[in-house]
Amino acid sequence: MKYTVLVIDDSSIQRLATSILVKNHPQLKLLGAYGNPYEGIKAIYDEKPDMVFMDVLMDNVDAFELLDSIEVLPPIILNSTWSKFAARAFDYGINDFLMKPMPKKRFDIAIKKVISQIEQAQLTKTKTFSFLETYSEFNA
Image 1 (cartoon, helix red, strand yellow):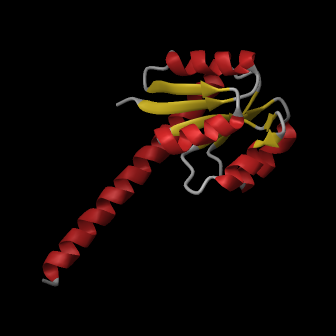
Image 2 (tube, one colour; image 1 turned 135 degrees about the horizontal axis):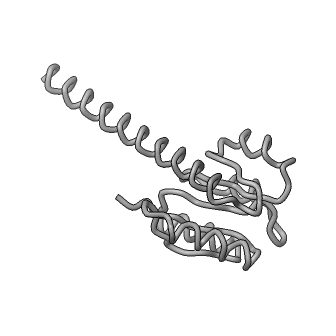
């Protein structure tokens, strides 16, 4: 299974670098890369990606303002040249925080972590559905 990814970063160089890492990963499929953060947010709603890479500081907006505007968050991996944002990022419940430039090894660790979280959530959902199905049959 390939997991779908959006990249949101106003730096064309970083957007390209992240997109290349995504395209070269055997378990990932790039849905789109956005330099305009508002277009990226629209794409989250339209495309419903499995995960999103997002820069912390972008023109006229930061990732935290964007995260506040999204009702249902997919797994988010924030990236920045500033480590001071890491604690705040985790307070927002993001899945990982990567420093720029993004080393491939650290990128791979973050992807493995997020895929594991996605699979665990799917397993929990399946078990819950199975339990509810059994419970309703028992009470019928």
